[in-house]
Every structure is written in C-alpha cells, then in structure tokens.
Image 1: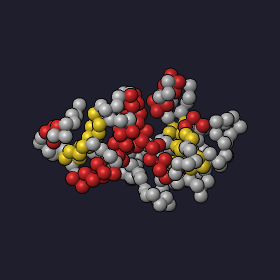
Image 2: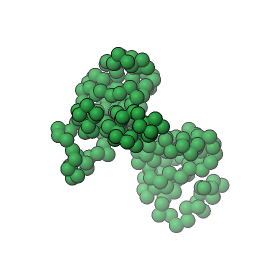
Image 3: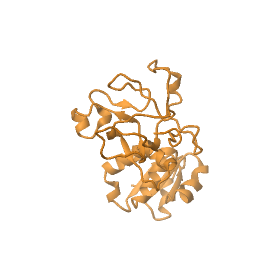
Image 4: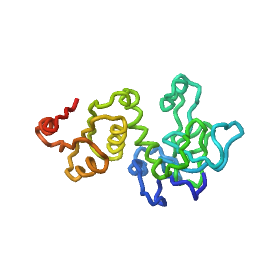
Length: 222
C-alpha cells in the first residue's frame, strides 16, 4: 500500500482518529516492542503482490483487520478460526510474525500482509467508509451471522450503548430487517439513534419502565 492511498485510520486521515489501543501504548504490561507503529482498520491500495497471489492485483482496493498472519495449518486455521491459531495469530501491529519481524500498523507507509488476511473493497466504495468495517464492523457482524439474524426479519434486536459497536449493530440490524431498540445512558444519543441510524426505539437505560415505553408503540423487545 502506498502512503498516498493508505488511510490507515490515522491522524492524517481527515475522517478522524480511532484507536482502542491508546492505553496499551503506555506499555503497562511490559510486552510492547519498540519502536511501535500502531494503526488498525486499514484500508488502502495494493502496490505489489507475490508470485503466488492470484486473487488480488496491483491497484486493487483492500482492507486489513486486526490480524495479518497465522500458521494456516492447525485445526483452528482450517476451520476459519485463525484468531485461535495454535501457534498464535499475528496482530496487525506490534506482533511477531513467523519470520521474527515485528509487524507495523496503519501508520506505516507500507504493510505486508498474507493474501488470506486482506479483503477486496469495491473501488466505488470510499476507503474511509470501509475502514471501520474491519474491526468494529466484523466484531458485530460475525455473531449476527452466526446466529442467523440476517434470516429472521422483524425479530427484535436490543443494542446496549451507541458507540462504534452499537452504531454498527443498528445499521446491520436495520439492513437485516430487524426491529432495533437502542438502550443508552445518554438522552443526547436519541436523535442519532432514531433519525441518523434509523433505530425503531430509543430507551434511556435508567428508565424504570422501559418495556412500557416500547409497548406503547406496539413493539416488543425479546
């Protein structure tokens, strides 16, 4: 990926800075390898491919999540559970790859990723919009698909909190045709939940009688 095209969800991206790792950078656990080049939820453009890579080409728009490698031959990798790899999945940044190199994240000018761990993004889809799908998006989408929520239209979905994960849950829920209720401690989230994201109901979690509020609109949370 070239530095001109790699958004990396870093501060140079006008869309903003997203980092759940800000506390880890203080290295309280003592396991960081310096210098650290962080950054996940990476979206960029392929600048080079290996000779065995057939599914991707130079110029393709791609995304990288929280892992860039694993052993690829243990029972977990064979089952598509690479994050549980017997030899340890390799994190996008500050991980140790199997050749001993320390991985560098989205702040890098370039990153090297095994073909199994990056995903093609339609060129018509903005890279900055695709980037959040590679962590918070996958985190929410995976269990929803596992429990076949995309096959149960009109079923009720409760979303607790409206941060990054919550926003994704609402959007996926509505895309799957679910009846979505957002629970939040902040009344300021009401407009965002209902009018921006399209949730069906909004309930303040401190409300002592939330079911009554929902039932008034003939909608049940289950």
